[in-house]
Image 1: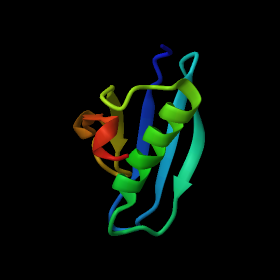
Image 2 (image 1 turned 90 degrees about the vertical axis):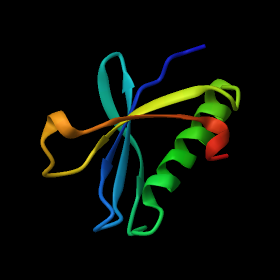
Image 3 (image 1 turned 180 degrees about the vertical axis):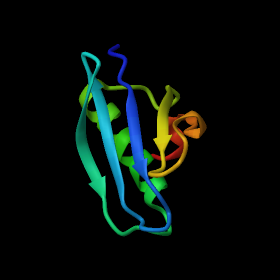
Length: 89
């Protein structure tokens, strides 16, 4: 099974989030959530789950992690979140 790493950049104040995926150590934007102030991060995680299940056939109990970057926040304070696909699918 291929390991895929993600970064979700954005914030609740704008509701805009960008999802990036790592390929050979380089990050590429694969999806954007625009104007979802209420559930943009949740929508981003759901998109990642659907992407992994459809493209790589990941099982729903697979543990996923992503780095959460908020613009303007100190880089050392950007957390890494871990969650199972079945939490969002």
